[in-house]
Length: 171
Image (cartoon, rainbow, N blue to C red; front, side, top):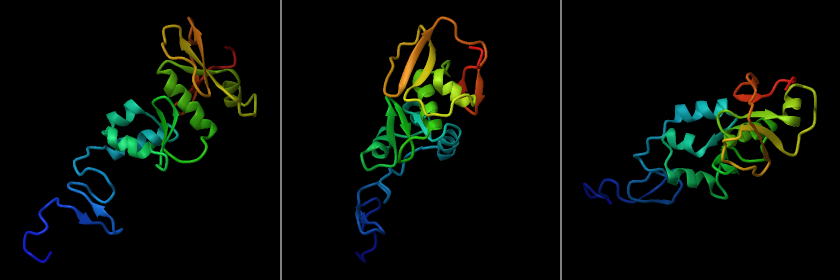
């Protein structure tokens, strides 16, 4: 390996950890050509309590392969709901469950029921399900810990705690 020009650029090499690194890959297993916008993704995860949707991750430049790696059984991310991911290990917090419920339900959704009462300080237990109001036109179904409540009259106003929206007590 002392020869000039050997190994050729991009050839497999040994990483600092002692593993073989293949053609065009760095030791973290990421393609060098990835266009992931870490700033955008980090800001989104901070704002959304470490919860992100598949479309959001892809829009931030994450590839399908990178998403699969993060979601593998020993990976740093986990699936909370279909196409909704928690970007940390461990059990989700109440805020993470509420955020995941809203992201799953869609942009006009709002938390209602016991979860909303807890956010308003009128209940202190963690509800089994997060009830979410959605328009009757929403095509999703209740799933996991999310119970969708369809309505023709979404509230005109909602309370919010950061990006987490919930109904006012008069609802």
